[in-house]
Length: 419
Image (cartoon, rainbow, N blue to C red):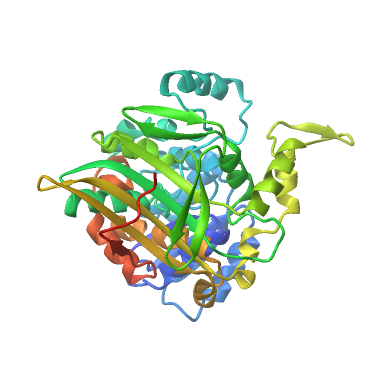
């Protein structure tokens, strides 16, 4: 019997909300809130009559702490699920602290305005001290640890797939298969085809920032940063086939390095087709990926936001996308004094996802873990006060829930390793 406020109504949020409604004995009441209330109303109307969950909707500007506080105090949820943009993580966490309610999200904080002088000064100091230059990192949210702990509240960070499930895979491997882990390679393969010359599978602003940034990985206790897309490997993914994949910086490396300090190397790879890379490089070369405002015909616009308006909405890709995703982690290490390798992964079918919830697999593989993370908090299976990432909790009930609600894992004990 739980009341949950869900902020966001995009592709991922739509999946998470529908999955919550499949577990109405836990999610008895939900309020869907976003800046565009009509989207919330349309989804609520779609779900009425097919779920026992009582659904209400609200309008809220998630950048405005006062509006968030007013909504939370009015609705009185036990948990706020932030499935909006990473730009809004801190304002929603602030509101949760004021209202004394638990918090969770699917991706760590990054600023919308990377030219803000106050943020820029902190960012440049972090770049020098930490050794990587990505705009997103956990430091801003980890700074809330003591506040949440003293308030007796839990903040769960990054309960998507990667980050999220991949971190739980690491905790599962450490708990059940290794005495010590030497290396972790996280592999994210999307073998789907949506038929467009160029489109992104989630928010274009976030996606293109991430992909065009310098890559980095953790090795021997420090960050190694490399030019964007400069390390390429090929891998034969079950259900998808041979794909090119490139080393990227990704947020879960940072928390895994902190929580598994004995691991010598942690890398993240994502697959891209040549057409995607060619389009992206062209857009980058002409300035369309820039976040710096420019004047156009007397109006200030941000190039990447204008590009976002031109590209297909990721929420509309579901009916067009065919193929599968394959996302997982490959480990090397030792068990009982013997060398061991292990691969845990999930294969998800785009068309099956669309049949169930009207989305492609990218939104599905983030929305289902969002619901499962909330389920862990609401049922008390995860109950620690403070700010935590997924690998800091018991992986067993989480992976059990993922398997039950659409993302079962597979295992290999003799995987092909990435060189």
